[in-house]
Image (cartoon, rainbow, N blue to C red):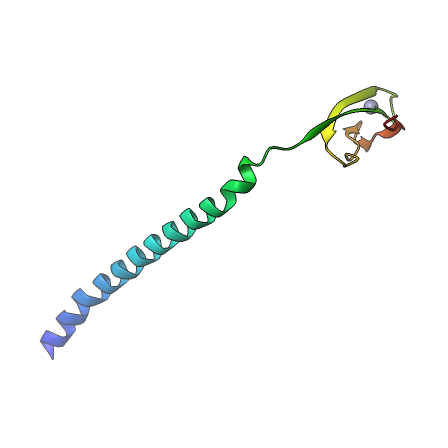
Length: 92
Ligand SMILES: [Zn+2]
């Protein structure tokens, strides 16, 4: 009886430690796998094309000229005075 209780006292923490170690090893493996999986995407260069987007702030009329943007996309207008700026001149 007494022996059994001592056994549990020693085995329970050991079991918990073993579980934590297994969890950490597993998490590290998954993290490594995810990172290896993500790497091709991170290395892929963003293709920028020359553009000439002019944005005007609707509040204070400040102008922003965008010379480069991701290829094939009209970028979201930048914010100025907490408002989206107006696209004044699309690409010619
Ligand atoms: Zn503004």
